[in-house]
Amino acid sequence: MLEGVRSPAVHMPRTLNDLYYASNRFPQALFWAGGTYIMRHRNNYPQKEFPDVISLGSIPELKRISRTEKFLEIGSMVSFAMLLRVGKQVLPPLLLKTLENTATMLIRNQITFGGALATPDVRYALAGTLAALQGEVELKTNLGPRTETQWMGVERLYDKQGALLIKNNDLITRIRVAFERRTFSTFRSVGNVMAKPNECVMLSIGCSYSQSVINHFKMCITFPTSLFLIPHEIEMMMNGTLLPMTTQHIQRILKGVNDEIASSAGDSAHAIQFERASRFVEASLHELNAQSLSSR
Amino acid sequence: MKIKCVIDNKNILLDVNSNKPLNLILKDGGQNIPNCDQKSCGNCVVLLNDEAILACLIPAFRLKGAKILTFEGYQKSRFWHDLERAYADTGSQPCPHCFASKTLIFESLLQLITRATKEEEVDEQTIVKEISLNACPCLDAQEVIAIYNAAAVYRRRRRVRRS
Image (cartoon, rainbow over all chains, first blue to last red; front, side, top):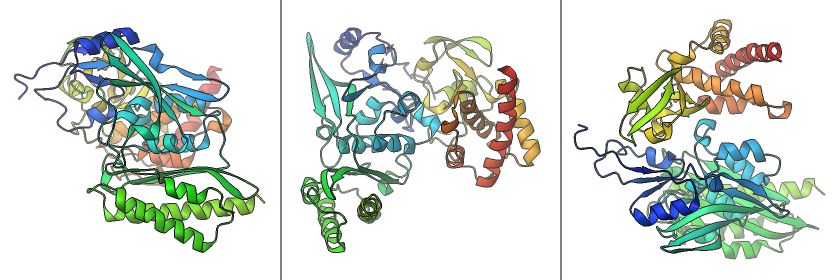
């Protein structure tokens, strides 16, 4: 059975310059971060046409976690477990909850930030949460003899169905999250992203309110294979709303969310996902109401 | 690809395909590890550099210089006795099918005791969630928590004696 199976060449660059050199020389090579996504594919081994691999695990620059006055900067090869170990006290509560709810400890030891954001056909909870926190990624584009660097909002990495918009020669090197604390944040998820992606729904919401008026409302609804929705119209409707919201206002918001989901979700979205997303939003708005009332 | 690593405290030189999963490497080496066909059933847990991982998710090239401890190797370590006594004390233990992997997941949770501060202690929900990585339903949540708590008592005593 294993006759003719080629052992792919593995390149392990130690600096970013070595990495660009390797990716120029082997443009078809596969970038390997944590490997949880690639290794889960059942036909991964043995496979006759498995491409060469550029492993990103030996580049110290990609494993760095640093903080400035305003931002937390996370290298793209930092694993979820590593960040939970060193940064529990400084992480925004929404990000902390998302990381703790993603898979189990054994898997979190392996999942990296860059890998979780750049998987081609599955969107994890991290992407939605970073979008709700208005996180940014540093994108380095390899243009042969030179490289271009730009910071880009996480929400611009994907289209409404969650398809990855970055090109093959783009590499996520750092993720930046602001320390700005939101008065209210919630993360809800249901289902197993890997086993049953068509039943899974994730919702991240962050907002602030002062004197009972909502501002900076950000929401992201994710279906792993068919939706990555940041409903800007709903966000505008929510900003400036007086707390506690009336039942009529919540129903109006829900109707708007349902319409946006229906118009944006891909064909593979399941009816149960629509129902779950709607219930999640409703429960979160009631939670926001409850919190605002109890903090008076 | 030639890879030097340590498996169960033995220095080994592997000559394998660079993307071959660790569970298949161990299986070919005579270890009793199932091939789950990358379904992540949770039955192939091993300790890689003292961290519990699923062997089916680790390709060969990541093993360069690594220290791998399978359940057979773990049984020779002193830490195994904490869990062995916990199983005896509580009167419940995993079924033979998932015994090795659940034991190593328990061990990965017990390792947190050595580095956890008071406010970071492992809560019951986390214990049950971690064990549920292995889908075998042979232990219920009460039993899982009882085993962990019993083993944690022995592990804390060991920690106190050492300090």
